[in-house]
Length: 272
Image (cartoon, rainbow, N blue to C red; front, side, top):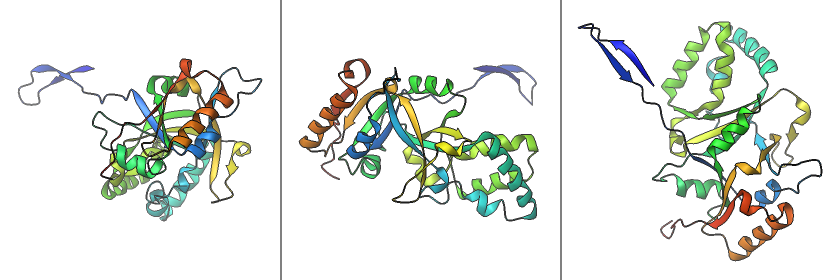
């Protein structure tokens, strides 16, 4: 994209080319073999499209309390903040509550691959699902209650500045602010290069409750066609690999040739 601008000193005109960040070609989701068995369900008789059955998380119940809770800590304690809280609650009732699925953008150098395999891929013994970005984006666009967004990594000063600006925002901007807040994370997590699929849910009837930790979740189906590869962790044992192959065959049939490949990670972790 280009635009014509004028030099403030000599007033001459020139064309400025705007550089936009390149979009990923793939996004990854790391998990365990146990969770994979729950994602892959038998195709229902009324369901012509095979799906992965995810539980999207409530972002207000994440482990990182600085992530979205800064609104409560910094914004809603003042008198004006109380008024804003009421307005945002009204917006929440219209837009819905956010539920998210975390995905990772791994650039060419893959510098974040080892720590993420360790934290989210069952300590290198799980799997990672490689999604086709264009197909995911098409799926999200087809549903008006979904967003696919990159996380924005901020330091505490930037978080405080956003909060101060919100106090002076006009009513019509609060909806955008409410939706944008779902992408904010503290900058110590920047290496993750996280993207999020966000589903805005305004019906409590679909929301579930995990009895083991009390967290809320939302069942969401993502078309299996969005999946390119199931990659098996570098420390997964042969029995787990063979079991996963049997599971896929039993639950979704011989469709891997048309939908996705299954392979073992070639990540070298001898020094970990």
